[in-house]
Length: 521
Image 1 (cartoon, rainbow, N blue to C red):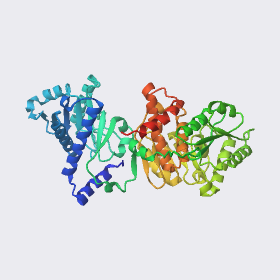
Image 2: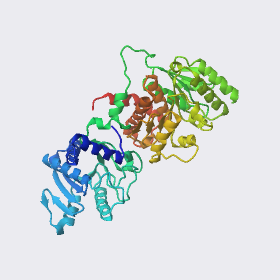
Image 3: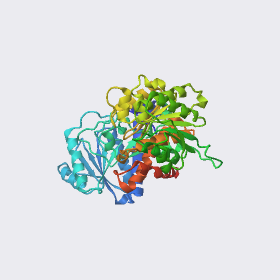
Image 4: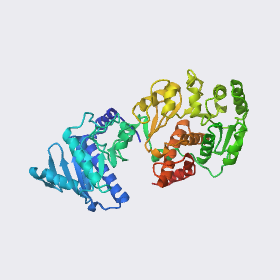
């Protein structure tokens, strides 16, 4: 499912008219019918209600968004719903087909707000970027006041987007109210994935306006959802062994951070890779051997932290790397001089290997923090490297400025840096972005505040490595791992809500999330 900005959406609609004869009226009819079908299905399947039991109030604006709302209302009325229309600009109220006298509009509108189960926001669409008129803000405030009075009894449904949300930037007018569900039309809009807009959309559905598929052929930005993630799942043939699903080497963990290697290594196996090996110093071996029984181990030289020791560790690891499809560097490594020396030696050696002998590379956490201190660090990376910074790590890699955890600045950062550094960039955040040098970009829609917990990034890094071992491309491996990482957290949250999740809680839920993804919708 492709993501567009407002200019690209207008271009698609214009081409639909010019090349296929799909004028505004036709597109509007398609949009309204599709939105009605989606809301009707939501009411029947999720709320277990018949449409004949439902009364809706449509807030109708003066433009195309209002037109979409009117078509939607007509189709729902034909299916038995009781429909009321409030035309905001003219201050007209049509109550179940009857025009209300002008002097009674306010009284009747208040009565409706106190009774209906659904308010459909069809006031303004993507074309509005100016502040909302004060009387429109007042109308929306009345809706919000009534919803607060009847929690769970009144749902706000936005058509295309909540009024006052900027579809390009994610900015939100002070008068906007949060939708319980948004039915966007044709394509999700760019601003939906950034804050504060992301918090205003509620549950997102995508309706059709009947655009021919070929019009979207040149679009490069995609929403990462279940439909896309399902297509990325690697096959699991019956005639398989552990070598079929690949071997992963981890250079992770240190005395202050022993849990990181355990979490990442466990995640490698939980996504279905065949074998995981941890390269660790002898003092850490008892910790891992007693907790991660399924792993094998490479023992690295111990001793005083020095550049020489780092070189020795790199040589030892490289001697054992043959036959491994993936190397994961970083979680819990720390920032000692020996560690940085080992990382740089590994990168130099990997870059010089023939492509068919070079394992895929994932760098996370302290792997990135160590590189941030190296001038032109990206030139040390072999092609196809996956890096997985959170906003703080990304800021350090850039060396200037601050990258937000959810703002629109992330979009340009992700696009530019993937190309400039020639990496697959996983920019973590509430809606994680995955970008590649050629320009493709995916944004994960689902988010979960319970993931704001130590160690969850180590799990994600291990998941990416595990899917690389199963021969997914770096872009697809990162995308599938990001999706299932959040999906697994949602399963945990069924028991603990949005707080209290431990990174280790994710591990048994990863296969469960994959299994759920395989099930037909």
